[in-house]
Image (cartoon, rainbow over all chains, first blue to last red; front, side, top):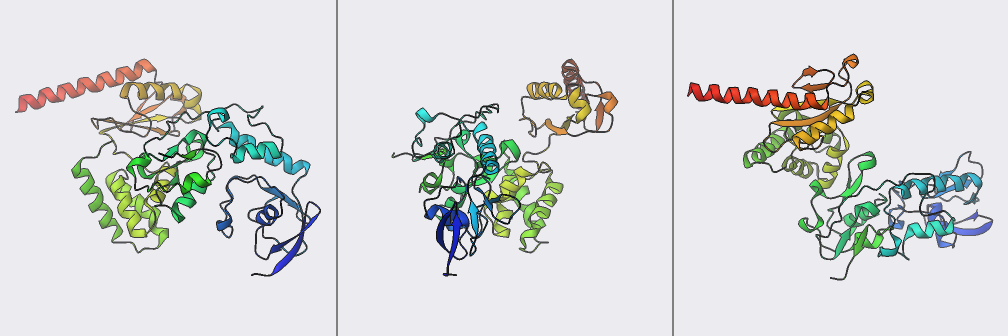
Length: 215
Length: 173
């Protein structure tokens, strides 16, 4: 650890620390790779659930996720190609097909990671070919300082990690398939849990599902 | 669903007894939950809390496991267990309509138990008599070619039986 290595991303020669994942090496050198679930502090055990940070590495037959692939000396990486763009667009469309799109009234608008991905990769926010599936779950207003809207959740799991490292570990992922959601033990509202209201979940939420209010 | 105090103590006692046979190895978490479900018929939240403490994991993680697997129930099973077949044949013959009428009549969702603990509603995948689709099982008794009217009829028949029993019990006293 601590050794510097050289690699090429999109024709740009960059340096990275040995053991760093390619995603972080690229982001630190102003090369954007779409990502939702990745957290720098967790890079040694990435969640790798959003499936958006695909890249191509010369010599590898298939695209790989940038958040799980360690940077190695002399690596040649491509972040854009026809097949990568298609993969990312398909993944993004699937996420957006059950994301409650309401940018006009959304507190996260402007700082939203989804908007950023759509802009960077020129993908429509509202997928054209997929039916919009709204879960129509109730918003949780029970905690004074946090509003949780499960319909906007993209299941990246960042709030769960943040809640465990900085908060009181009340959040978790439960249920399966389409019903999967971020929730608390027994699905009780946040206001009735041991939640300290630290807001670390809202800080890391990329999609405006968890919003901190200044009450 | 609110648990009674007896149910809560039973849940905690059973889980502690089950847990005494297991070490703190995390691999035993699911077998423990399975054994609790075998003994109680469901996995109540007090039991999940005890289990979480024993294995030193977050209680929300235990909840995550219990909600992930269909095998686990969160509500106590009712006196009468209604199981609606949602296998391929039954599905094609309108199994979901039958499911909906049970939900509407019992006023509960799939996997839940009615407030008076008389009925619980579940979905099953094929009971092996696809020619009779759509099929509903009530306490392992097969009801074939069910229609929404038949659902009403079955519940009415159940009500009559219950009234008769009550009357008989009244006479005996």
